Image 1 (spheres, rainbow, N blue to C red):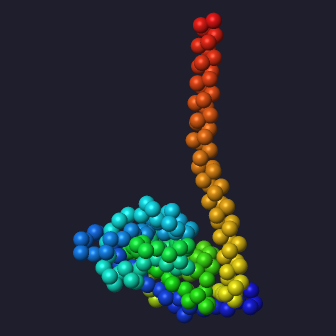
Image 2 (cartoon, helix red, strand yellow; image 1 turned 90 degrees about the vertical axis):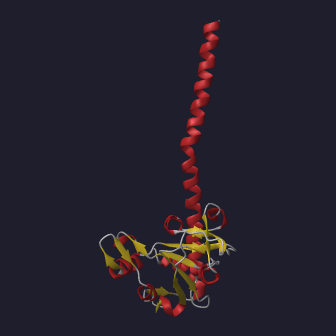
Image 3 (cartoon, rainbow, N blue to C red; image 1 turned 60 degrees about the horizontal axis):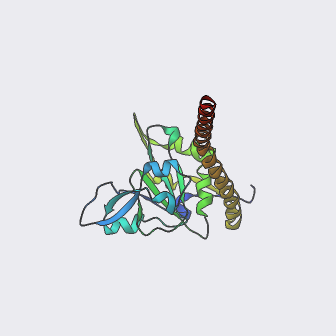
Length: 212
């Protein structure tokens, strides 16, 4: 990693804190909200995952600032625990009506210096997790990441093409893991179907013997 450089996030990306709430007002733009749990539970956001996002509204300024675009990264900025904050997701495509909700930060990388997917994976390193844990503010049941703390996180960067190669490899592995998880999620259901068919066959066989 001798050729890698260290930059503060705010030097290579635009960072904003969303203030878009879950309310719906008739005089505002109708949107779908990418909420806290959507970011927390997903490694990436695409059209398929956005199908179930809740409907709300926002004003013109909020829409312009927080509409989701391919290459951006969103992170959780609030949490009940210091070691469970700064959880990221990668925005994998452009959206026309999906806006980032509150308790979240939207990060738009400078494409000449920072690859969004690489940044998403960087946020998953122990270095990043430790930084957020040690610098989160607040106390009691609410910890938070102020915008200056997010902007100041040191990001270790290779050249942009190396970033893209690294993120491409990790993305392919991520997709394979997701496919395997879907298969595993379906296994209990498939097992039950097979058992029901077996039970039905045994019942028919038993009935046949009884009649004979």
